[in-house]
Length: 243
Image (cartoon, rainbow, N blue to C red; front, side, top):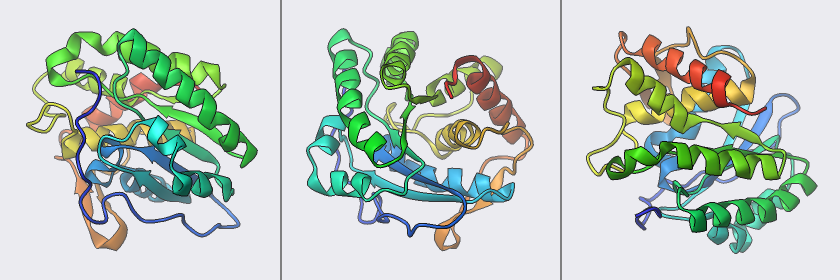
């Protein structure tokens, strides 16, 4: 199936709330589902930025299985957007590979783009991936997210294509969890490399493979694997990213 399975988020998995505005740096709001909050991916992006001296303030509103329509209809989410001060609002839905789901993604992106723009931010589309049982649909997923980004003159974050670039280099890299839907820690690290590169306008090549996140936790990949993931993310951003 195309939509994500609905899951209740673990306590704290969709938090924290909006960060306080800073005089300098970029503020990013992530709206999505468990594909966003898994393995604290947004905070890996933040840590990657910090590793090169960039200030990236990150906030997350994400719930298991949430669609963009649910975010649009959630008063709390809309208040968070309208509070302003964001540089980018990152939008993530399921694969959206079927014609019906593609149109839903595009419509909800258009409807969310208006309040995002009014708040002074730019929408950014976080391209995901098809489930492990539908890997032949990568092109359809990519095209859906490209169209949604073009509809609103938004940024395209081609994280799903970064996964494909990893597998072209080494098909044995485990980017999925066992459920064949959600990202493994390595999968989320790859996503973060792509998103960092697009939001910060920098190549992810040469970044650390071990990062300290909020609350002192660490995200890391095997030292020998880090360059492969970085090269893959850089390739995807160069070929498919939309700034």
